[in-house]
Length: 291
Image (cartoon, rainbow, N blue to C red; front, side, top):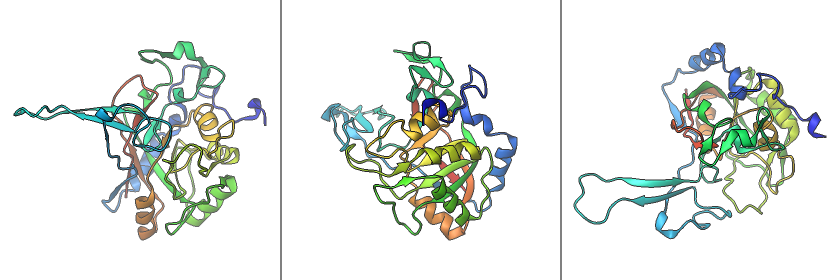
């Protein structure tokens, strides 16, 4: 498959588009989400994170991957009697141990950022001017659909590629019709905070084509691209960079799977409310599934 054969939304919503597949979340999609709230229950889809003390330095600590820890912390306390206590956090947004929302600027294609803006025009040393996480900061609300690829608390083999047929089979088990504007929440039973040279299952290009064909607005997963990486990376370099499909990386989905199984319901209101920090390549997020 050549680059010209890869699915793309670069010409779909105009050259200055900043929302990507969030354009698919219309009033009908939000109404579908609202109709899911019947049980007065909610579940977090974010990993818990223990900050690493900033005093240990910015080397590869707190994570077996060759990157700094997800969160570094210093408590602003010197032993004197305080009026108030504060702390400062250094967030390494795209860490595999931290649930985060990728903006399209995270992955350029041929020195361009979705939908074809040169990197030199879109990114500066002081912030991202096009393709940033800004469109996420008012909040994202749509219907989420959980597809559990390893039911009953299982996990996929490390070597597995997830393809369109796997998504079709998982969707058939739910009895749900996936509608344009829905968010796909995909559980494989994996913790991706592993050394980068260790194998991890991931989606193949047919799965990304499935997302495009079904009109997925957001992808939330405990897996994304397979490791060791093969190029183009289907999730980051095709779904995110070419389709403009926001990705929630490193989600924790076991609690959600348990609730869905107990209720025999695989759809819910999905709420993403990242901090309103502008000009970033992504943001930490605590996704909520509301039933």
